Amino acid sequence: MAYDRIEVPESGSRIEVADEESGELDVPDDPIIPIIHGDGIGVDVGPAAQEVLSAAAEATGREINWMRVYAGESARERYGEDVNLPDETVEAIEEFTVAIKGPLTTPVGAGYRSLNVALRQTLDLYANVRPTYYIDGVPSPMKAPEEMDMVTFRENTEDVYAGIEWEAGTEGVQKAREFVEEMGFGESLHEGDIGIGVKPISEFGTKRLVRRAIDYALEYDRDSVTLVHKGNIMKFTEGAFRDWGLEVAEEEYGDEVITEDTLWEERDGEPPEDAVVVNDRIADNMLQQIQTRTDQYDVLAMPNLNGDYISDACGAQIGGLGIAPGANFGDARILAEPVHGSAPRYAGQDKVNPTAMILSGRIMLEELGWQDAADLIGEAIEAQIATKRVTYDIERQIEEGERIATSEFAEGVVEQIHELA
Ligand code: NAP
Image 1: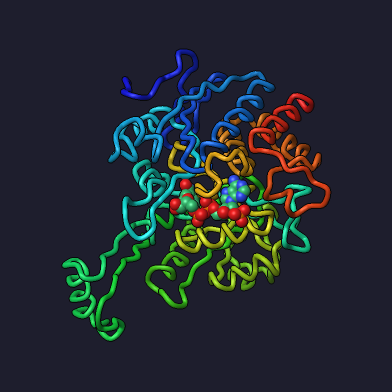
Image 2: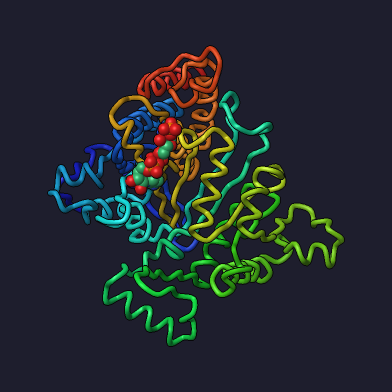
């Protein structure tokens, strides 16, 4: 396909979908991979991650052919003041199947809607997946941070991400109020100005997310999948998420998966060998459980808002946003991205930690089947942190550390890759 402002690299090949049903990819050794550097600190962490990922690919006999695509500030510069997410950016990510992005700024309260949400929805990237594991040497507020090894699966297309809401004082909110009153909930609304939002949670959206979480648990030999919800209060949305999730567990996996209820009713709490246990927890309880019983949880599947809070809280336990990686998955489509935002006050200062973006790229490499390159990155980051030459966020919390720039940290990781390869 011909693009207007995007330059497709002259060398390199496209990643193809080998099997639409299973989502299996056909990955060449020289893939073309689109990258959005991102707003704010994206200008620092984007190029840093690119450098490290390229080095890991080369060290394992491959080559990544990067293709810059644009969103946010970089799009406005190239396509015009009103263009935040050019159609061709979305088309390029669709065409090349696997991509990586840095953070994009979203104005609060007014202005354009979140570009991150738009990208995830347009590309139907329905699962936001965040592995949270401890890296040796990273300072943490916890006594035993190494107990944290959870993977959160956050639904990415509905709940608050549906973005259905009406502003106070508008015709839309008046209609919504009348509808709510007509349905018998008038007493729940205060008089005067009010904003009203709608929280949709569907059987389709829930089941495909929970399926993905269970498939992951089976593939990576995890013990449990916990459905995290607020079903005691919102029975027909959050509660339905739990019920539909348990239905998937009970009806689609045979002996491989067992629910916690069946486990206690029929097996006295003793799971069959290699089976994944599916249980559920109420979200507020879960927020304390991740701190007090960290080692008892494994894979978490959640509606959008719960997933947002809980994955950030998990990230805090292993050293904060500078470290926490993520990726968005659709059927046969991947867009890796760090958990953190664009941290505007550090933008362009070559200061912040690129680890989160690098490790997001690591998830991408794992999905390409490049496990050796992914492992190399993990080891190289650990080795670099062990030198205590680290970015400000880590340096300020350790003794006798040396504060270095984003680019220096990335160079350090590249050197470690060369030594380890
Ligand atoms: P943020 O950009 O994640 O930054 C919050 C704080 O986290 C920073 O002040 C910094 O803490 C720390 N931090 C974040 N990234 C770091 C890194 N790479 N290295 C070291 N420390 C890091 O959150 P925000 O300020 O709430 O959001 C800013 C903008 O980003 C908003 O427009 C928001 O909508 C957007 N956002 C985008 C995404 C996305 O693109 N996926 C995600 C979240 C937010 P200290 O100052 O304490 O060191």
